[in-house]
Amino acid sequence: MVLLQKEAELQEIVQLVGPDALPEVDQATLETTRMLREDFLQQNAFDDIDTYCAPSKQYKMLQTILLFQKEAIGAVNRGVPIQKIVALPVKEDIAKMKYVPEDEFATKVEQIQADITKQCSEA
Image (cartoon, rainbow, N blue to C red; front, top):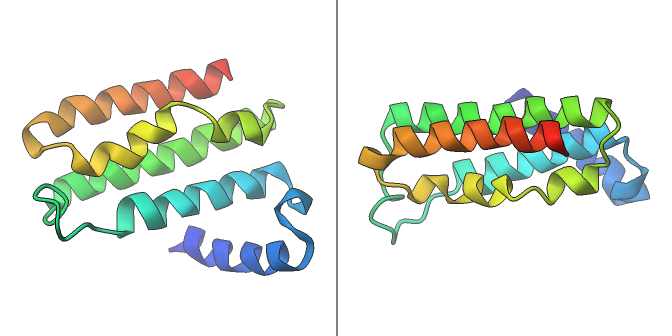
């Protein structure tokens, strides 16, 4: 909730001066909140897997997005350009994790979390 409130504040600034005027840490926050809205909060009622999601899966998905936030900000603080972080291949895996069946999810989410940590540290 705090991140989504922060996004609303940042969007006002973006509308006035553009996204490039924001510090890279704030740009990372905007990327995370976009992922929260599009990859976590939005559901596809026509998809058999995404129509219903168990609370345990929801928790792991949210945990994974927040891990991305933490690692992305860490990378930015180490001097990694935000464009490089936004282009990481693991972002596509994060976007698709809601379509992973329950019986495969635990293994897949562990791999995604490991990839987040690895790709952000290597960026």
